[in-house]
Image 1 (tube, rainbow, N blue to C red):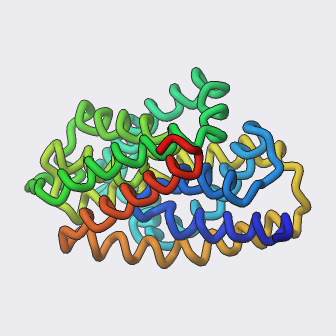
Image 2 (image 1 turned 180 degrees about the vertical axis):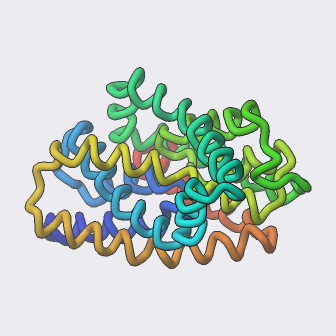
Length: 262
């Protein structure tokens, strides 16, 4: 298999799994090793971050109405307070991931070559998904306290590690503190924007692959990301996350077998 095709496959995997609660980073870690992608840990992390930048645009398109409403609301006296509260909650929830990303950057990058670690973390993601189907709440986003937003942010920070699903854990965290399912999904989508954009921009200059390969991989990530966003929203509302839990267990087992652990 050509290297270019391998990168295109990873782009498609990134988009398809970024918003489904199955850990895109875990899939990229496992499948990049399976495809024998010739990149060291730092280069892999940079390429994966740029793929995340592509899915940033997918979620921006998917949540454009919300984002536009928040931004334009700042200029309208009757909506300014609501928009400001939205922004504060999102910023507070973003802080943990930013701190973890900067303080543990080298340690995190090394994990992107550890297939066994990613596989084991997929089991943790599965557990969160099984529990999520049993949770229900009545709180909406604007009912969140700063502490509640911070707690969801801690789940997002944990999901920087490959194998832990960002969407899965943030939705789980939102459900744990009593949010209704539709708003848990909505907040998770909005919360992904600053993190994926920031990580992608910071790592963009570190990617050494041909620009055509990067662009095609990103296009695939964007396209499959749109499908993943739509599917996740439907399945969360129908309490079908456990199906992804079973899937995570299967991929985790495959990863451990591939590494010779099982």
